[in-house]
Amino acid sequence: MTRPPVRTAPTGAVYFSLLGPLTARLDGHELPLGPRKQRLVLATLLSRPNTPVPVEVLTDAVWPDDPPRTARKNLQVYVSAARTLLGPAGREGRDRVVHGCGGYLLRIAEGELDTLRFGSLARAGRAAAGRGDLAGAARLLREALDLWEGPPLNDLRDSAGVAEEAGRLEARCLTVYEDWAETEIELGRPAVAVDGLRDLVERHPLRERLRAAWMNSLHQSGRQAEALAVYDDYRQLMARELGLEPSPAMAALYRSMLGRGREARRPAPAREAVSPAAPPACTAAFTGRPGELRELLEVLGCGEERVVVVSGPAGAGKSALALRAAHLLADRFPDGRVRVRVRREDGTARNRAEILAELGRLCGVAGNAASPGNATSPGNAASPEGGAGGDRAATAALADAWQEWQARHRALVVLDDVPDEASVRGLLSRSGTCSVLITARGQLAGLAPVHRIALPALADGEALELLGKLIGAGRLRADPGAALRIVRACGGLPLAVEVSGMRLAVLRHLPLAEYADRLDDSSAALDELVAGDVSVRHRIASGWQDLADGDRWVLGRLAGLAEGGGFTLDRAAEALGCGERAAIRAVESLIDAGAVTSPAGEVTAHAALYEVPRLLGLYAHEREGV
Image (cartoon, rainbow, N blue to C red):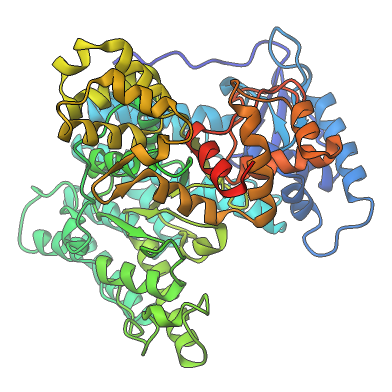
């Protein structure tokens, strides 16, 4: 296999390394990185390359307990020093570190940072394995591992913020090591992995996949007694530390080795361990979103990002995209895929005890607290933990059991329709190889580190394809202009296009042009978007209830501005009757809530053109009487 070229830093560029102590080299010579606090800032920025890092995150990394009053000014000094060290980015000579509304963003290329190159090699290796090129996969994965010089950022782990980032990097390295070891075993070269696996198991004794690979490598090397002893040690450790048995997959691997030769190369599929966690149903009407789906599959499939947030307004197709991705990622998550809704049918948030109990039932989580009195009853929704006294203790036990399960399995958990950050913080994995896919109307800006995918309106072609699936391609071709008017009147919102299609599929006599006229009438459009018990107005109303009272008023004022194709910050300030800073805060609050869209690329707040989705704007007019 020919490996795709990896971009390397040009002569005179600084090369940074996080996979070990934080270092910077220029033409082979190590550079001084300044005092410890400056290194902490640089390490935090490099841990999230090409992603805005909030000032609060940088502050917590440097001053976790009691930041001084001059913290922001000191950060500016440290960032300025980083700019000097980094130099300009690319041929354009742009600043390496820029400051925007999301925080400080560090621009850096793949060939200038070892973690970016590590990720590129790991993805290429997994892609090679997927094509059946095991030799190429082993070579690429080994090349990625050769960048690993020790525990990431091991010289700065006394900072809790940096330690968290370092733990995430180490988990990525361990996952790639497991991929590499399993590939070498599959190639019939188990001996090359034995010693390294033994060392890693000593440092991570409860990581089951590492131990399974070690067992298999010993077994394939003809050291069966040692392989069986590895399992026995693990079984005793699990019982002593957690009061649990090894997973069914691990037990099946052990049984396959008893009295047999070397035919077993990989652990038995672990889907049996969570057989109740059936994959979510996949919507048959899923259409479009090729770029977003590809990104989702790449990010979750490579195992480098453990949490992904898919955001967009109500009806944007977040759940459909998540379920489609879960359906396609079956092979990457042998311990199952499970979906849990974080809201009730009435749109209110479920409490943590309810969600944990459902996860426990679906995944077979062993927790004695699985039936904590009324902890799973909706009647306890007043408390986020599901009650008081014994119920709190039961919920804590469920939470601990859930974390232990995630640390030992490789599963995909879809947390669907999340109302806010607090609803999921205690559910996200702190270690291990489980991944979590979150769908939410708002941006959930308080969650970090996460990979974010925002769903825009469907492109005209995608929306027409969805409509055609429901009304028939022949009817669509009979009046393509009217069909285009329909999907544009729906604002490219997948739910609205789908409801239009369902309605037209029943009203076969209704010309597309007449229905397009109805949707063009802003006073009646929402009344037309109803098919049986499916109502676009009802779904938008649920998103409206998520907004604070002040945000609803602001949205009502801005909706009128958006009808002409968008509005600028100056027009927003005029409509709201406030100053520039207040207008910026008001607009950005609605962006965070998913009610206003902004350009995907970098642009100043004054130059940006903001938009309110058409149907949400119509609903805001109804409610606010603007």
